[in-house]
Image (cartoon, rainbow, N blue to C red; front, side):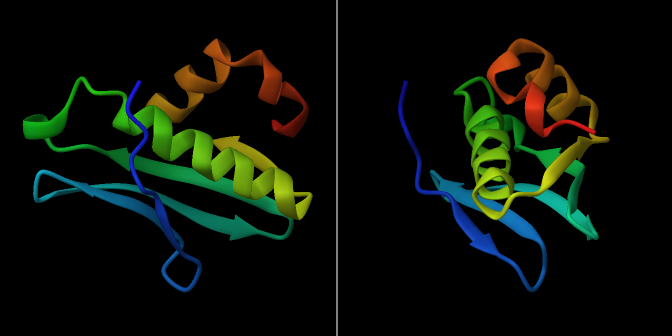
Length: 92
């Protein structure tokens, strides 16, 4: 699986990557020590490459590094979390 460079902007609360000129994003908001993932978006032109999963994994790893919990309100992030039980301890 290709790993793309994921960038994080804590000011705008966005994880992003640019692939073939297209921007894919994961947006969240912080509620205390909980990261609430509200949206994961990957343009159709670059879909099917695992990019959304890379964004979600980056967000979960960031939360883990800070001792935060994660509330995946976005349907994609919630489904991803179900498929990755190694992150169950982070879920609220």
